[in-house]
Amino acid sequence: MQLSGKIAIITGASSGIGRAAARLFAEEGACLVLNARSQPKLQVLVDELGPQRAIAVPGDVCEPQLAEALVQTAVRHFGGLDIAFNNAGTLGESRPLPELPLEAWHQVLNTNLTSAFLGARAQIPAMLARGGGSLIFTSSFVGHTAGFPGMAAYAASKAGLLGLVQVIAAEHGAQGIRANALLPGGTDTPMGRVAASTPEARAHVAALHALKRLAQPQEIARAALFLASDAASFVTGSALLADGGVSILRG
Image (cartoon, rainbow, N blue to C red; front, top):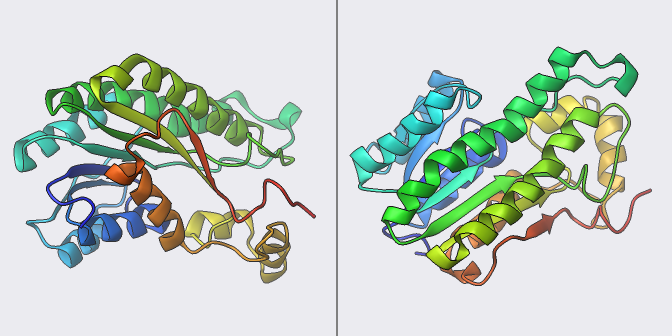
């Protein structure tokens, strides 16, 4: 098992990529601290994985105290922290930039980017105490290789994660900490279905990819597993595209 004896935090774990990653990481031997805003959905997942394998800590990743609570829970219940999959995110409002309210901009930046800073700030000291670890952040090809109308805040927040990853990698690589961004393409998740809300829209998005289909959450989870595991021991500061070729073929 690739994560045997490892302790991981996963945010946004109640659905989509985060839920798939929680199941996969548990299958690979990790103990998990799982976060999302929905306590009932998290508890269903914890019950499925078992209390010896997972514990739920619901809350909003925009709150600084939550990042600390997740790390404290990992240390108290499982003995430390080796992996953090900072996956929680939001699409936000889809509007042309001149029509985007400042509050909507802040809401997306706080959820997608500031929460990643808060998470890393709390997670790095705990990883240093274990002699290193792996930080993974869910970014996107949007804002990296493509821009879509109405997604200014989302693109800016996801692009910002790439800079954050590079600095963490540079600051802490010598101490055994790796930091990477995972950039999925279109994925069949609840959030993805909000962005493409009709069968026609989903077919259009699928056609943008070289593989001519959307990803399943489990496929993106396997890419996260690679970054979390020792198989990626020499991978840090990277933007790993798991995007079905959407970055090289659109239209």
